[in-house]
Length: 170
Image (cartoon, rainbow, N blue to C red; front, top):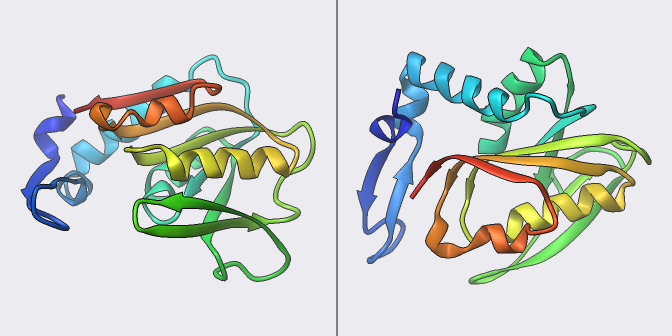
């Protein structure tokens, strides 16, 4: 199955000149969603890891079923102020400002091995910040898997110190 056939292209969203890769059509298709999860899991064959982590919200969509299927815990990486309890955070630059992400300070410990999963790698800033945040908690990011990679935006360069793969490339 070619997952590109399940991903809708929307011109001029969120602004003129942008071609948005909309995964809601993939999520609505039971066979397509199942295949996407299987393809991500295939990328993890032979990888030794303890946890799956994903950023809200679409990293949760793909990361949680992978964690469940592979009998691993899931670490939610959330926007600032969304997690109860004590957190550690990482701020990073966006095209239009700054953003901050957080994890619980006790979510990971030294020596934990983590796989990071998200729906998309574009410029790579969010993914790099998430990986650095988990490393600051003491974990080692052993693999990052993205459903979609927008190759022209060169996000992989932001993650060159990590083992990165993607399923669908544009």
